[in-house]
Image 1 (cartoon, rainbow, N blue to C red):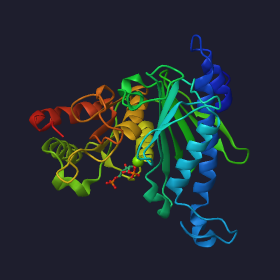
Image 2: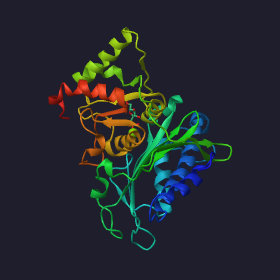
Image 3: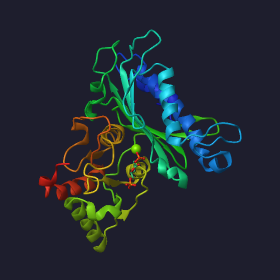
Image 4: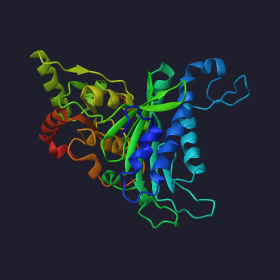
Length: 340
Ligand code: AHM
Ligand code: MG
């Protein structure tokens, strides 16, 4: 691999590693790359809404403004549908999955895609990073037939590819096809993503914990005990620090680079947690496991959970192995509370 490869070059190069590859996955990743650039452009204009018009209003160019999460959903849906490269899409923004027919009325494509088109979108108003999360599976229904819900309710361990786009101080695509994790940074001047973070890995030892601690009183006892353990370690002089953006992609991205744990547990006010198994937790879990990290619901591996519904929520623990192992120890003391 050349040192400064672009995402386009990298995708083509990577295709060679898949025996008998038809190039379908490469085309799918290329479509995501394109949609990401379009959404990035719009996210960067978010600060101008007061000038160009608020969501639902008509701006001075006579265009109706849309909420950014609705816009991102439309861009990703249209890009993938127009290119006829997937047979079905499920999105956090849609009530049900969408089955896609090709021009011939059939669907011969083999992949389905699940996504959260703009995660953490409430952060847009305050100029904080947001992200797109995606997850790819091979269909289980025969090619040529319409997809069914079963195609989407596969365990995370069946994922073929997963990744995210982070629209931050720079815009990046980070993804895996099951062969490690690589990150690409957008050069906005020419609209090209360059391989900037090859072979990303969680540091062996993390020291950042990311959790919405305002909910402490509602947390399971295992989480409370783990947080107290960390704080006692700090008292003894160990260097732990708390960082919580409230934007999963950004919190995950920082923790993968610097080492840390992200926790969104079940709680008395959110008995199943908040995050969605299919659109958020499974893709992040695949990335974590491909980069020397771990992801569980506090007790079991996220990617082994059999989904029962599209918008299912699960508690989510994800990060560096040392912190995940310690958190699991505290959780296991209350394994009887495991039901959620
Ligand atoms: P969303 O899909 O409605 O944007 O919610 C998901 C977001 C995550 O990005 C973030 O980690 C979490 O919700 C923050 O939740 P909270 O504000 O309860 O801490
Ligand atoms: Mg979300």
